[in-house]
Image (cartoon, rainbow, N blue to C red; front, top):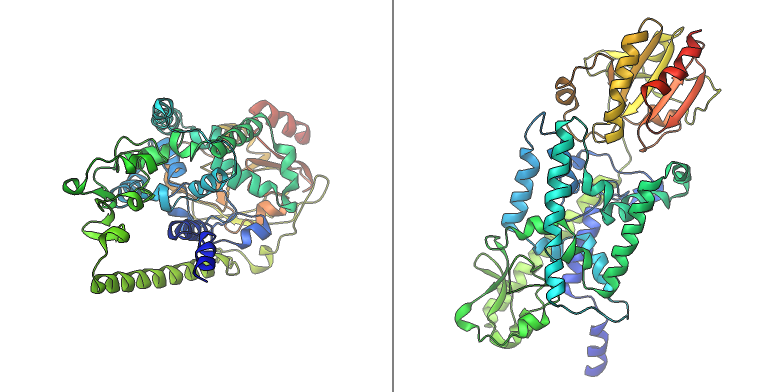
Length: 488
């Protein structure tokens, strides 16, 4: 009987694996997003989770700290990114790379891939040298390029845009897999192809090398590694007890030089092999895990730890239940000022050749913009967002068009309902003259067959008929070529 129980235990997930699964579910509590094929746009999206979890994942209920950092650095011309830097410092000082070992969904994906039965790459001087590559990526793609483009007024989250496999897997692939998003395939180009190839290569490498992305490429792990010596929670070594047997180094799958350094993800693999119980997982002075086979704590200590674990488990269950309730409750559209209720019901899927249904959106200057107020004019509607690089790049073209043909052409730039920063402050730092409005519920862009893919431009003739409806960037010459025939 005992042998059967021991065999059964081998198939049970470890406590660390359960915590990883819990963290992945908590970070992606918007379960209905995988059913509807839409991303979550609630207020919690303004906050960051500790691990690498794509903002565009249908289940994500908060932002990725790495993406938030890049966007914040790209906006430093308007204000300093105090919030994002403060959050990263808080995570680093309290948890450090324990986040990588316990709380990162991408880490869980890598470990599951590594379980596939194939020959494995062992640690070596080469892998240790490659582990410094993530610091180069942090400097170039997360800091330098976003700052450089931010000075030009063109936000560019370079790592997310060109490399990040989490964004491709959790965001792009997850959205494209939904039947309602098949129209997005026609908008894919060379950038998606290159990112998809990068994702496949990285995931394949994880099969042969333990946490290949985490060890060699992840800039977020590089950031948390900077806090290795001062993080409150992590694996600690009591030097008087250490006999330098090397068992911990042999058991560690990461490229560490000593336990707890910047490459250590605090997975606790070293604790179970330490013959003198010199290694423990601690939160300050509180021992969270030790080699109990060696230490054999007194019954009263065991009881206190058991009570603490039960309390933490109960709190974690309550937190997960609250997140699932919050993220999956039916959406309630916010009240829009000065908009009659009858106008909020907009037909979905307006196409070229159809008459555009009337709609009203609140402007950022406190007024409202109503389509029916501009009948008899050519109307150009641009759907955009501050976090969309191509959108920001083409805004001057719409502003120029409005200035040149304002008497006959009504131009409006409508921001997505997904707002990640203070849009009025963003606009105040620029000198645009065209009206800016907000699509508070996303109903307006959906009325024109759009979704989260931006930018999108709709052109309506003097009779109110849609003559152009396209997703993707435009330049001034293309805009003028579409509008001028309608004026004649």
